[in-house]
Image (cartoon, rainbow, N blue to C red; front, side):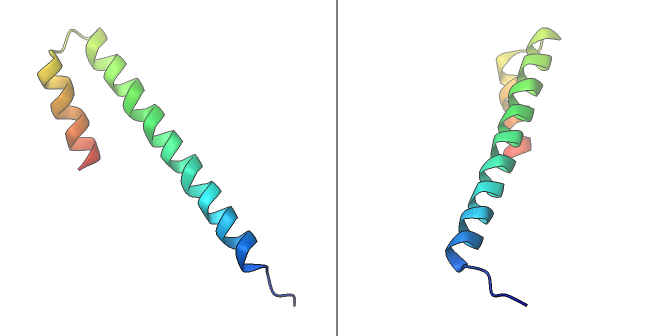
Length: 54
């Protein structure tokens, strides 16, 4: 059994968090595009985004 380099572990964790955040950003962007294409108002779109974020 070998000990992992803690710096590498942190870098891998950071990279995973970065990739997850990018996926969430893309989901939000796609949802905004969908709502706008459905004719939703800007207020409705902002409400939806805020619900997603919080």
